[in-house]
Image (tube, rainbow, N blue to C red; front, side, top):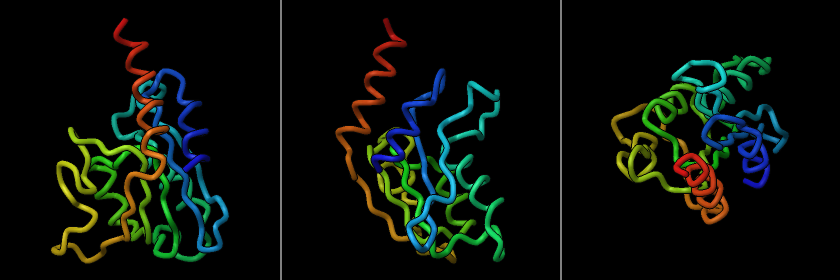
Length: 144
């Protein structure tokens, strides 16, 4: 999570959310932060960017990330949760809960929906205070 926080801090004009995908051996496959403002792409969330980068690097059946873990500073939204299920990510670890858009237990629970064919392990609230503080500082600076 500390690495995801480092990546989030580099988000520039975007909401500071960072994501890191770790391989089965714990090595970093990809890291990304939000790039919506930077690219003008509404799908350029940190999780989506990290998925794109990690799957582009995998040699064995590139899009399946079954033995991998995604670590992200904020609870994934519905779009990102759906993509994580489709990528068959093994584990999702997140920092801050997101009651307005969260899809890993707050507003919805896409990641653990029994109707889906894949359900990753989900661990929430890791370094929650640090993750929340980063967001509070960003939004405080934008509301002045």
